[in-house]
Figure (cartoon, rainbow over the protein chains, first blue to last red):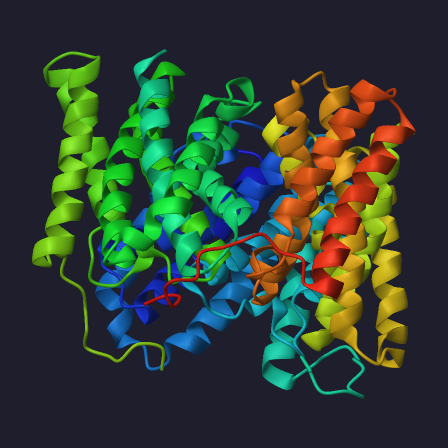
Length: 207
Length: 207
Length: 207
């Protein structure tokens, strides 16, 4: 298993849990849990593979990510009522999955021989589109576009860190760890301490 | 025409009618009817083809499904005001189209030589994504995720029935008929008699 | 650069501005501006390329459209507060981008040797899906489905005009100019003077 495939699998597991918890909020049945969990788990990597022309997409060749996502959905179905606050868990696990998925996206694009800027974009795409599909399908406001929070920014910085670490240190696990660390640090800091980029607020929204 | 292509065409026709009726609810003009009808008609099969790398997608090689969908949209445009309840017709025709599309998805994936679990997943994808795209684009709550109803479950059971019938009887029309029958029975029973899977309801939704 | 690629680039620029203005309405940060701008800019052409099997999609091979979209997003971020009415600018620039993108879609499908009806469909897809993705992701009512306005109709007429002009005059720039002109005329006339197709209004919407 390559690093890219390993990180894809890790991201699938954690994203699946967030998808299942969103299904819990929408009071779906067990198969609904599995549907949303799988969509979230493989959504970002699937969009990446389609854009790069890597078809059949990664999970058609290998049932493991789908099986892991389905298993996680069932586990969440039987345990989610134990959580005091589903929304907080969703947000934090989404941050973990984002961080791992960005690294997977960079690694897969690099392994396919694409230039550096494509690797960065595919890191962002892989990280952001799973959660985006989850939220759009269920009709929630996408986390990725929540105003005043770092999300795409964290993914972009993490993807950039992967490139820098690879050039400065060596290919392999170090750039992926750097990517995951930087993405999670920025996203987590934004959730916990309200870190944000400046934005113009001279006018009210949606006039 | 293969069985897969024939079922794709049948699903396109019925899905197109549901799309046109949704366009009627949104008071679109005739071209809007055609747009939503075509999106619904070929949406599920298109997502399946993209995931499997079968490009150009099925309707680019053959105008028939798009032509049928456009014709159905025009017919609905001139007749939909005759219906007493658009929503009931949409829900029941969507059940018919779902049942046929699941069979088409299984058949196409099988014809491409994919393993059994991919055939099942592609059955579900082909069945569910046309209606999902229709509802997301028009901004309605997706039928596929309506709480307390069998939808993905019906698709999954139908796809499983296709596999079982093929192994137990023979390839060809029997498995496809079994798939359509099981899917429609479960989906229809859910609409008419409220059949559902158990779900945890210990907590209120979306706290 | 082919005519198709040139029109793709022009559409990307103008669509990017509309995406950035939608990001401004949602009060996103600068990276959010870039994200929505890029999604809108390359969304329609990306869907077209996926459907036709032209992968990696057009902007993976050439960073220019993404770079132009990102630059436009930054420019809008620093200047959008100068606008008296963001919404009016969004609607009119969206009309310009639609007109150029339809021409790009027809040209790309023609260059790939697809039949005339596929060229028309790909013109409509390229024109409509960028704005559709923008609006669905941000949670606004899609401009493409706004009742009582020509949108898909304008795209369809423009794509038809491109085919007619190519057969009647010559291939090259003339059909693309005809396409852009017809699309913009119909869409603009609909915005400014309320041009519309007839629609049945015997019943209230969404009963």
